Amino acid sequence: MLACELRGDPGDLILEAEDAAVWAEERREYAARLQKLRAQNDSIIQDTASLRTKFRQSLELLKLYQHRLSEGGAPTPPVSLRYPPQPAASFASFDASADRINLEATGGVGSESILGRFATVSYGRPEETSGAATAAALSRWVGHGLSLSGGKDELGFLFFYEL
Image (cartoon, rainbow, N blue to C red; front, side, top):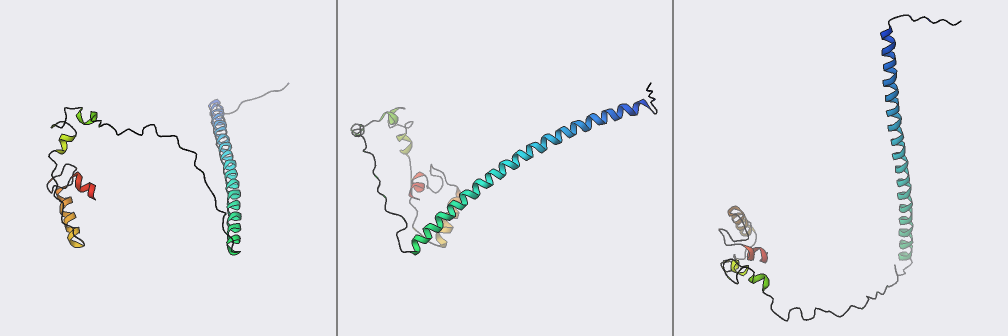
């Protein structure tokens, strides 16, 4: 007959069993991370091999090109391209009539229409300058502020358009 005797505090045995469970879980997590890293490593190795192959092919093409140039031959033969025939334009008369729908949508050339907004555009073209005078003028204009509607220096949309 086999006899077994427990010595010590039974609480120590429970702690050792809990520690063993924690260690087993940590070991499983470590194994999972290690497996993931190995898969990434395999992927990196495959990508590197693919890039190495592409690099070798590029290098061979470059050497062939340099060899042809050193022999005095043309680097590549001329290539002729043919574009497919284009269909006849079905919109040949698209501008035969004046379409003012967008301009008249808010009442014609009035204060609320698109053209009405340009009725009060003022523009004073600045003098043509160069060097320090231009830098000083730009500094002054930026200091006053630039906007599409004009502003203090009357440099609005038309000024930006001319730039």
